[in-house]
Amino acid sequence: MYVCICNGVTDGDIRQAVKAGCCGMAELTMRTGCGACCGSCVETATETLEQLRAELQPQRDNVVGFPGVRHAA
Ligand code: FES
Image 1: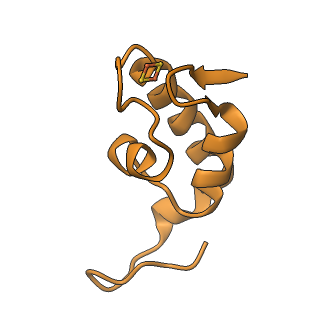
Image 2: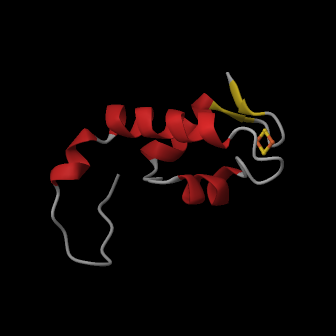
């Protein structure tokens, strides 16, 4: 399903970004362009991102790491 028509971003693209460690809308925009034009997709994209993060990255909320150090996906 297309989430961002302006930039041709699908829910599959968002899923891939989350799997690669994407953790917010600003990062999703940088990675895919989603939301960078008219902005009408931002609400749906944010909801999709958060749903996929909850589904794919549930263990990350319990991880305590060193500041500035990213954990591998
Ligand atoms: S639909 Fe995503 S920026 Fe226009």
